[in-house]
Amino acid sequence: MINEIRKRKIPTIAGNYDFGIGRMSNECGCAYKTNSEKDNGNISNSFTNSIMKDDERAYLRTLPAHIKVEFQLNEDKLNLLLEHGSPRKINEYLFEDREEKSMLRIMEQADADIMCFGHTHKPYHRILNSGSEDQAHYRHAVNIGSVGKPKDTDVRGAYVMLTINENSSILNKESIGVEFI
Image (cartoon, rainbow, N blue to C red):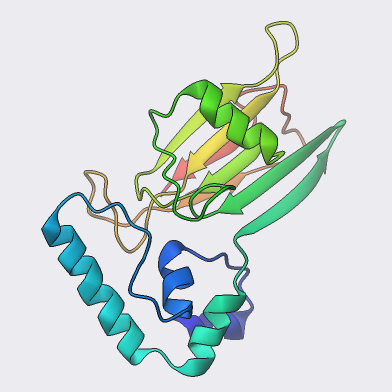
């Protein structure tokens, strides 16, 4: 997989496993709930470390923690931030039930109007107003789910198609399209 990503020059961010495997660590920064989960994680790390080539491991160490893209839409500047856990930490869990104030604070500190992340492996989309009732400023927190290890009730992998067009606006809460596939 690493060679295909490199060959196709696909922009990629580091996940917690990428970070650990790139450093030949057996620690993934996961919050295992059971001994069975921890045992399976250790097996996965050990196996992956045993088959990794030096150049693949070196590539994993070069992956950025974040990718930020700025769009200029009409009168609005729209910042999209991609990360694995949170802008603060690669293995921070941003669950759907996180307090709205906390999620907004994280997004505001990162200057993210749209924040796409994973780590929990549970897809969701929350639309949050960081403005006032008189002047809305909508932010979108999007957990993109997981292709290889879904942890929601659907065993199929999930990913997101994000639609940003010239009519998108941070002032209209429905203007950013998020479709889970």
